[in-house]
Image (cartoon, rainbow over all chains, first blue to last red; front, side, top):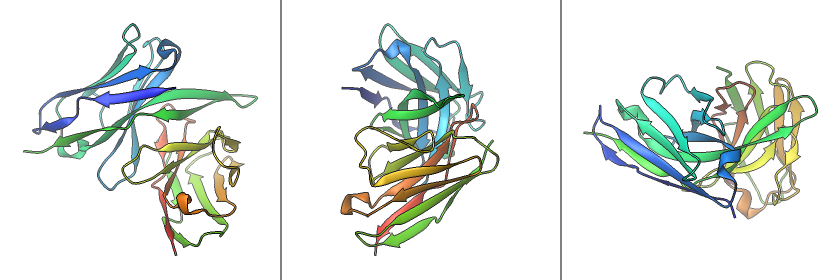
Length: 125
Length: 107
């Protein structure tokens, strides 16, 4: 059974840092890309960051570029999100999600088939 | 970034109703469109990927269609467990984006 379990959330002051972790099990972690997606209280979903299976390709949303760093340790089946210079607008539940893809006949379509339960990050003084 | 616009933002319907939610990206995304269902306090759940492919374990009353700049999610006969918020997502660009969500409520 595929499982993704996030940890590391909590209360942090503006300007502070936090490191989120996502422990993966039930699949070959090193074969899949991974993502972080967040959801502010009462709001919709916002993609945050992507990392390829090897870690060689990384993307960020403009809202976190330069402040957040995604990484992974395939030997430990773990995904991380280092969050620095945190702001109030970063307050959200953070989900890790496995990247899957589907060959449509002429291109690969990416989607998130598995999600963790989320970890809440609150940025407040 | 590609903007995703869902309509309606909210919808009241009854058990047994047929419901359609529309998603329009700001540019053509071919079939790079996925649909998710989210219930309060829970992680999103994948329903449809690549515009029309049903994720395993998802009831057949859910279906997706469309390509390019207009997509629809249809629930053929609403069940009590279907009342939730639905999101579309484009994965055409490296920065994927979600629609604002459609909250489906019981009439």
